[in-house]
Each structure stands twice: as C-alpha cells, then as structure tokens.
Image (cartoon, rainbow, N blue to C red; front, side, top):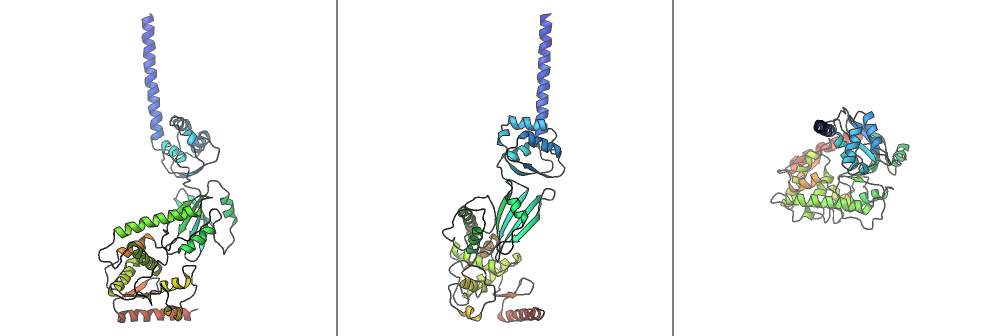
Amino acid sequence: MWRALASNALTILIVGLFLMGGVILWGQSQYKSEGPLETAICLQVKPGSNMTRVSRDLEDQGAISSGMIFRLAADYTDKSQQLKAGSFLVREGSSMEQIVDDITHSGASTCGTEIEYRIGVTRMQTRVRELNPATLDFDEVASFVVGEEEAPEAYAEKRGEADTRYRISLAEGVTSWQIVESLKAMDLLTGEVAELPAEGMLAPDSYEVRPGEDRNAILAEMQEKQQLRINAAWEGRQDGLPLNSPEEMLVLASIIEKETGQPEERGQVASVFVNRLNQGMRLQTDPTVIYGVTKGQGTLGRGLRQSELRRATPWNTYVIEGLPPTPIANPGLASLEAAVAPDNTDFIFFVADGTGGHAFAETLQEHNRNVAKWREIEAERNSGN
C-alpha cells in the first residue's frame, strides 16, 4: 500500500514538474515573441514609477498580453530596479523582452518632446517638436528665432518637463564664431568658452545634449567628429590633387560649402577650383572676400563693394595666389568628400543661373554668355520690385 502511494506521489510530482516546466516555457515564449501592439506608442515612465505601473499602462494600451509575465520576467532578469524615467518609443509588434530592454537600458528618451536649437548661417531657430509614434515624424508645436522673437509659452512649458530631450543642429557653412555665440545664448548649457575653436574644425551635424552640460564638452565632441571626417576624407583622396595636406583640403571644402547650396553641384564646383589650382589661376571666389571682411563674425548683409574685391586680405582670392590660409566656415561631410573626389570636368568658370544653382563653363567666351544671362535675370527681378 505504501509502495503504491509513494508511486502515485512520485507520478504526481513528475507530472507537476512537467506542467511547471511547460508553464515556464510558455511564459518565456510569451515574453520573447512578437507583441500584440498594432500601432507604435510613446510610453511615458514618470520619475518614481515602478514595473507594476508600467505593466498596467502597457496592458491598457494593448502593448503586452500579460502584465504578470512582464513583471515576473523583469524581476527574474534583475531589471526591475533598473527602470528609467523618460518617454520611450514602443514600436508595433515589440516583444515584452524588447520593451523591458528599452526602458531599463540607457534612460535616453526615444520619443515625446524634443527641443531643437538649429544654428544656421544667418540665425538660430528654436523648435519645439513632438514625435508622432504612428508616422515616426516630428510634429512642430512651436518655433521662434532666438534674439528676434519672444519664446512662446510652449517652450517654457516643455523646458519644465523632466523627459524633454534637447538637440543642437549645426547647418553646413556656419562659422566657429557663430557656433560659439549660439551656444552662449542657450541658457540650458553651462561653462565659459575661453578659446574660439579653429575655423573649420566643428562638424555640422546633430548633437543630443542635456541640461547643465558644459559648452566646452559639446565643442570637443564637434571637434572630434570633424577630425574623424577629415582623416577619412584625406585617406580616400584621389591621386594628383593640388592639395598638400589635410589642412588645405579643409580650406577647399569650406569654399565649396559656401559656394553652393545644391548637393548635386558640389563635385562640379570642386572641379572648377581644382582645375584653377592646377592651372595656376586665382580662385576668385566671393565667399573668401566676405570672410576677409567679417572674419566669420556674422553675415555681411549686403553685396560686396568693388573696393573690398580689390582690398588685399589673406583671404581675398581675387588678390592672393592659391588657397587662403584658413577655412572660411565649417564644411559638412559632403563638401569634404567633394574636395578630395571632384568631378572630372574641364570647367574653370561658374556663375549663378537664377534657379539657385550655377551655369558652368570651360571657356571665357562661354562664361561671358552665362554672365550676360544672369545679368538679364537680375535686371528683371530688380524691375519687378
């Protein structure tokens, strides 16, 4: 009898273990498999929250099939205590495992509100934007020009929220002085900039920053990125270029950047300057003259005078031979690449064509015809004002 009872008990234990193992395997499958969410959402985890509140929120929004499995797995993997506050993008079909990783990994918000400070050639614009989870595009909430317009209420409101993200975007062609002055105007940053970074050595790009971050640390990140770009471009340069160093490449890239806003033209503009350097011709480019007047401290705001075109400065390429001594702006990656891989052309002239681009020419006669067309376009525009 006792032997039968023991046998039955053992059988029950074995069956129970199998059932328990099956439940565990099923739970693991539920945790790792694709989730039920059909449209991406922005999950907000408030400071002081916990996995119980988060799991309930996810259940309410249809992002997970079981809050219990979500919590148990987070506890089992020792991630419950690593929960970060912020706003996190949960994509459609995200597994519970993916969601737990996202909300416990770095704490960097991936959706919600973003305030972008865009440093342009003529002004700094601040934009308050919200990420739309459904389209993954930013919807603009408010914007204003720093120093020209009053900050809207939405800006102050979002500045007060703990999970708001901040981004600095540098446009191609801004000068180092413009960048530093713009950073000084951002009251969320700290630290005094003692020395102006060398012209051309700050990479136009987008940088995520945090309130209280030191301006010098941000500038150092910009410099490091630009140096990496310079090294890579110089390493991949074409043979036979009239450039003796990465520094000369950087100078040429800055001129290309300031001469055209059309991405498809960069290679052609680069070819003109390379051809001129190879033939011993002066570069004769207006942006270098302007830099000699402003030293990169703001925009000229008017046309060049004949006296300025004739005035001898280290940057006036109507007067000096070859390249100026320093860059005239901070060039982007595409202009660096154009400087070391110009199009193969015989162009040595170009002039505006009225469309925002340029007309290129191989001979002076052809160039003069292009200039005459441009003068006609200018005259028509002026007569219409």
